[in-house]
Structures are given as structure tokens and as C-alpha cells.
Length: 591
Ligand code: OXD
Ligand code: MN
Image (cartoon, rainbow, N blue to C red; front, side, top):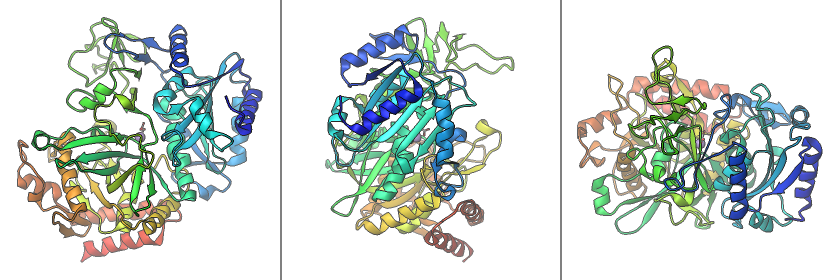
């Protein structure tokens, strides 16, 4: 498969450490993947679903203690503590290796060690990066084969080159011994005792964000937790937007948005380039260009339906692995909360227990069939609105960068920053409020700069400085905006309809990028004139509703500025430029 000495040495070291019974190379051929699927079904790891209704689709259930990313057990390992971030976990490099080596010792006895050569980004593109993941999990192999480009073609391109080393074992699936460790200084990831996607598909969060953010800092590009979409105008021109939102703020829905009828009738279309990760570089024309390094979608199933996201639903109808959703034994398909109003009569819940939609727990609360973080791993090519630029190795030029969070009151529907550095300030102070339903306490603000809080592979202050440095290299920078789909009325109901109607806000954003529409200057930036947000065909929303959605309450913003100041106080190395931006905001609010 390869004569790359570093790959061969990595495998030999791993054999010596983990003691697998055999080594199998993943060559990426359909025949080998099909044999893996068959084996996984025989071993009870996958359930083969109804091949007429869901061709190529399978169901997997994780153990109950292993259903989500574990931020508390995710570490950035470096020689110096301050080279990681005070708001992330840190371990000293050699201490971490020592601990991990003890945990990995003999952990693959009797098991197969799979070698997965994978490319993040189109195979052979000069902007793509290669990883080798060694794992004892056939579930990981099959998911990686959807989420990334895998196999011999990747080794052919790698030649004698360098790669990111990833070692994974599900070991004993022990919660106490679960560690997801990153060594950005060594291009290495080690993950043990989990088999949940975000912890073990090492190409995704571990490489494409944590390791890549560090590589980006050292090599002069950016790895961001952003969707990428294109808005096609009736004249056939397409403008691209990258957008960062914390979890549970509708990234996949925005990435696959279907414009409202008034726009569709005129010929507007939205194309999805990516729903989670963007690698961004400065192009020769001095603009920023973004690629999606992934090859599939690892999306949250609950809430995905014909109305909220028909494109995502369609994407999951073939070649998809479902994890922790409910099983419908009557027709051998799957179901999740929010799919439709017809839960299975004869079902099995994500824990493997008999289940139907009417079951209640001891407190009378409905028992869920699918875990709230149940997922689909679906090939990008299935997506009906996949951009034709998806494989373009040079990426797409960005007109706008959008940040957003869930804010019941503070942030207006949309505002534009006044400069690149002001936009970096807006991103650095991004936050989302928890909801009563989730935590019992409304309005608890969690700062999540650029939606990268759990994903920055080095010091957060240095990460902000990198954004500022990048700004100096971009002759024609994208404009930076902030959106908030989640303002509520006094009864706690969302005011803005969201979903496809977010197109109306994107329309204003892109018009601003081309100086086609005016705006009102406020202490926090430029907001639209209410009448410039197109509300044609929107029931129950008037220009006055939009005025309310765009209101900026100075007293609330003074508290916000204090919140940002105390957040900066938790960090180290916050650049002076951002402290100046904060002082400037305060001055404007007090003027
Ligand atoms: C996430 C994800 O947790 O994309 O952000 O899975
Ligand atoms: Mn994500």
C-alpha cells in the first residue's frame, strides 16, 4: 500500500503498543467497504435497514455512556501550559504520552487494527491535508469512509510526505479512562475509550479544527467551525458566505436553506458547500477562499424533517449510518423525535429497549425513542443542494463572514461590523444563552468565540491575534456580520420565523457587501433600516416587528460589554486591538 517509512513506523509502534491480532489496510474500494459492512452486521455492530426504502443504510447504537463529545475529557497537550487556552483542558506533553501509553498498552488484543489513510479536502489538492487514523473500530472505518476521502488514492498522493497521526481505540469504553488528546506540536491525536463520532472520527473536530487551527496559525491560513453556502441570484451569479454558530443554533439548516417562495419564484437558489468546517486561505486576488475539508455530514437527527430541512432529510435516504436513533421494527427503518407525527408502534429505542411513541417514564414524561444527540453520517453527494464547487480545490470566494448565537434579548436580528478588527471583536465575544428547557435557568450566557471554544488547538488570545494578522493580509476582506434568529417576545416565543426565511437576512447581508443598501449606524455597528428587510409573503411580520428585532438597548449592551470584559479577563494574550475595540464600544454606549 505504501513505502512511506513514517507510516510504516507508526503502524509498527502501534502494533508493539496495542498488540492487535492483525493489520488491515483500508483501500477505499467499494468491495472492501461492503465486506466491512457485512462483517459489522454479523458482529452486531450495525443493523442493516430496509434496502428498498433506505438503500445502503444502517443503524448503530453506542453504549449509553458514550453519546456525545466529551469536552471535560478533551485535552490540548503542549510543552507550555500557556500555549493552550485557559478555558480548555491542558496536559503537559510527556505526561500525557506516558498516561496514554499505559492506557493503550495491549488494548487491541484479539482485535483487528485498521489503517485508514484519509484526505481532508479533495485528494491531491495543494490545500488538502492527509491523516492516517489507526483504529480497532470497524464503525469508525465505515464512518470515516463517508466523512472523508479514504484509501489507496490518498497514500499515492502522500508519497513520502508528512501526515497527521491519529490513534484510536474503543478499548473498554470506560468513561473514567476516556481521553481525547491532541498534540498540535507533534501533529498527533490519541483517542481512547470512546466510540462516539465527535471523539473518534479523528478527521473531523480533532484534525480539521483542533490540529488544523494550529497548522493554520503557523502556516498562515484559518480552520474554522463554519458552514459555507452560496446564494445564486436570478442572473446566475453566486455569492458565498461562511457562518459560525455554536451547537444547537441551526448550522446544518442554514447551510441547506430553501429560500421562501417569493425568492424561489424570482430564481434565487441556495447551494451548500459545507455544514460544519471551513478551511480558509487568502487567494491570489486578495480575497478569502473557503473549502469544506469534509466529504459528508455528521448531523443531528432529531428535529430534522420535511419542513425544517428537506435537503438534509433527503441526504440521509441512502448510504447513511444512523447512530442512536429509534428503530421501527414494522418496516425495518428508523425514526426520531421531530421526524413526523407517526412514531413506530413496534419500535426499539436508542438504548435497545422495546419502545413506542406513547411510553412515559416514572415521572410521566415521554420516553424518547432517539437520543437527543443521535446522528446521521451521510455522504455529501446525496445532498440535493450540494454546490457544484464542492470539489473545487481552490474553494469559493467569501463575500461575508457571519457570526451568530442564541440571544433572547441582547443581539439584533442582524448587524454589520465596522471593520475587520471590529468583526474579529464581534466574533471573539460571541455567546449563546441557555434556554429554560435545557437548563432551568434562562439567559445564562456561555461565551463561545467564533464557535471555536471547544475546538481551538492553542491559546485563545493567540487565536484572536491570528485573525487580526490575517486581516492585514487580505486586500479585499469579506464583510463581517452578526445574526440572531432567536429573539423572543415577552412570552418567550421566537419572533423571527427562521429556517428558509433567514434568506431575507442573507439577502440584506449580501446587498451590504455590494454597497447596494444603506444602514443605520449604532454603537455596536450597522443595522438595517427596517424597511430594507424583505418581508413580502411573511405572515404576521410587519415593518414594526422588524424594528423591534433590530432594537439595541443601551443598558443591556452596557452589561454585555461588562460580560465581554470579564470573559477577556479569563483569557491570556488577548490582543490590544480587541481591548481597544471593547473600550471603543463602551465609549459609544456611554456617549
Ligand atoms: C458539533 C458537531 O458538536 O458538529 O459541533 O458535531
Ligand atoms: Mn460542529
